[in-house]
Amino acid sequence: MIEYDEYMTNLERVANEHFGGHVTIMKFTTNWRVWFGTPSDRGDIQAAPVGKTFQAAAEKALATDPAYFRTGSSRCEFCGVTLHPADNYACDQCRKSLLK
Ligand SMILES: [Zn+2]
Image 1 (tube, helix red, strand yellow):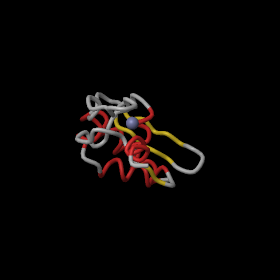
Image 2 (image 1 turned 120 degrees about the vertical axis):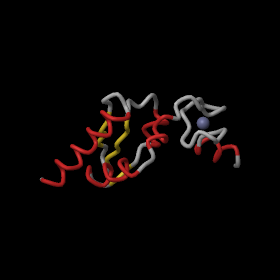
Image 3 (image 1 turned 90 degrees about the vertical axis):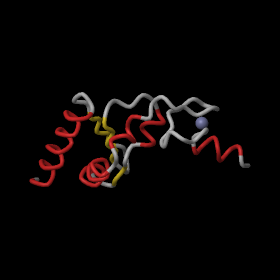
Image 4 (image 1 turned 180 degrees about the horizontal axis):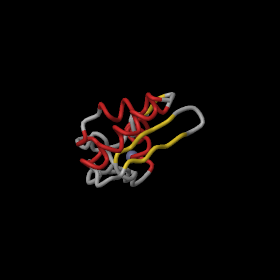
């Protein structure tokens, strides 16, 4: 359990230093996701670094550029979800349906 504690301590430190103390840890049926800040919508949840275990998801989140979690001002032109990365005009789902 030492590993678990170390990841938790690192997540908390990054949250305190860069995100006003906010980090969101999500567990789903088959995976975990970690989002720095508070997810604003489903787009943020889908964009959150993912792993099969808490440790794997935490490691990915810690290795991700903090700027990635701050792209909330850019939204899909079709459905309005938050875009990651911010320079796209549409989310992956809308782009797929447009290309059909
Ligand atoms: Zn969309």
